[in-house]
Image (cartoon, rainbow, N blue to C red; front, side, top):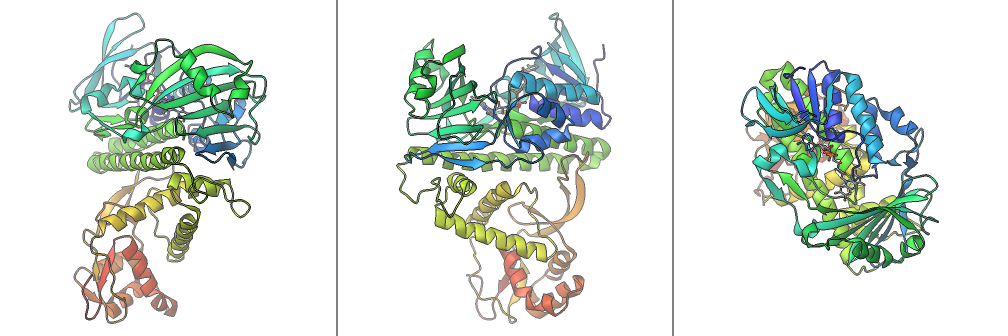
Amino acid sequence: MTTSSDVIVIGGGPGGASCATALARAGNRVILLEKASFPRDHVGESLSPSVLEAVRHLGAEQDVRAAGFAPKAGATFAWGSDPSPWTVGYPPANGPSAYQVRRAEFDVILLQAATAAGADVRLGWQVDNVEPPSAVPAGVVAADPDGRKVRLTAPWVVDASGAPGLLLSRGLGRIGGPAELNRVAMWGHWRLGRRPGGTNGETSLLIGRREACLWYYPLDDQCRLASIGVLVRGRDTKHLPADPTELYRSAVGSSPELAPLIDGAVLEGGVHTADVFASASMRMAGNGWFLVGDAAFFVDSLLTPGIQLAIQSGLLAAQCLQTIIRQPEAKTAALDLYERVLRREYETFTWLCRNLYGAADTALPPSFPGRPQPPETDGMFAFLSLIAGLPKADLAARLGGYMGTRAKAAARGGLRVIPGEKEGFAFLSWLRHQDRLARARAERITSELDERSTLLPAPGAAIAEELFVPAADARVLTARTAVRNRLGDRFEATPGLVALLETLGSECPYDKAMSRFCAATDGDGECRSSFADWIKLLADYGIVEWRAARQGIA
Ligand SMILES: Cc1cc2nc3c(=O)[nH]c(=O)nc-3n(C[C@H](O)[C@H](O)[C@H](O)COP(=O)(O)OP(=O)(O)OC[C@H]3O[C@@H](n4cnc5c(N)ncnc54)[C@H](O)[C@@H]3O)c2cc1C
């Protein structure tokens, strides 16, 4: 049996399976070691819509659709002190856009994709030790299914061993998230007689109250089998009673939405518990290793980002690795990109979850985020309001600003924040990005911009060769000229932007900068008339500044 390969992947959950599939498909020799024998049960049954798209890149979409999982038409929220539930729907696109899955079967489908792609998938292999991350070639010591210790070597190790495993990240150190996100989860499967009121078809029901947050996921399309979970504030599972069944039943029973459901229903297979603490590894990747999925970071169970982030990080790690294997000189840049993208995702989801749980704890005034505002708004608006932590009027203004920025950027040939995501998430990323910029720009530009102004690059703005994340199905990262701001954000560099920054190498009069910019963009009169707007947009992204004729930068 082979004991050396190009990459060793530890863990056969969604993160490890995705990474192994993409790497094997690109022609690498991949050994995946999974301690359990599959199928094995796992918590995490509710998929967000972007999971299907990620699964498509793995070639497993049809198998997921054909598995008979319950379609998920959206999520119904009974959140905060507002008694009336509201629903954010997921419009179907060539079939349901999301599912509630039985993880034992879902994870098998993803692991089969890895095998089909050519990965050497070994079940019943428990990794006991990862050799020092700096060792090249790195290696692992694992117990095979007969308990024999085997040393396997590879230049790269991907730790996708999930939150409890933490093989590599255990040694790297872990930073805890905000205390208010720390919860203890109790959950079980129920054989039901009916579905809850207020839900719209096969939607999840998420209940957020000061004392506890709860989930209800219908696991079959008749809504006869359901997963019901409770998240309570608490130190950890060690403080739960040895048998938490009564505590769990009473928490579910005290929810007016769920109490009628469990009346006469049968709890199958007992009550499970887990600590749900947000945390992230001190580092996400280094020389010889990558962390993927929960091993890299974990935020929350209720907003259901876990599987999506595990697959996305698995695919991104594969793209970074493939880039490094093909172009060793790109190693530092690829590791840096991976670190940056994962850190940003962790911070963004932590911020969203703080808003989410914050709203559950508040006695909501009518204008508070998370309340739907019918008839003029819809569930998506209410959802954005809830997780962005913005009341209705503020959200509308910020959405307007975002759409305006997008329209202007598109008209100018596309100033695009990388990485982009679907529109809703792109908006939330933009919102957070704007807040970061506002906090970081101590010297906000308050002086008027006009033809007598002098333009200059913002502190830290630079043009450089950067790696970008291409489409998820691409095998390698792409290198392009980019503009960087002082926060380390990278933007695609259009010819006009490059010409402008080169001209501004030192300070430059408005007219001269405009001529160079318009010449580089083959600009006409329209370019000249919109130049000031363009400069203000670049200033918003921390790329360009100006000095007015007589004032400085206030
Ligand atoms: C209470 C709760 C509810 C959740 N609900 C949802 C939800 O509804 N939707 C959602 O998207 N996410 C949910 N999540 C999160 C989701 O379950 C995880 O984010 C997801 O499973 C992460 O995938 P992964 O591949 O990183 O890790 P895992 O799925 O945990 O896979 C890790 C694998 O590594 C193997 N392994 C561990 N140690 C070793 C070793 N030493 N050697 C070899 N193999 C090893 C394990 O056996 C396992 O198969 C929930 C989490 C919790 C705690």
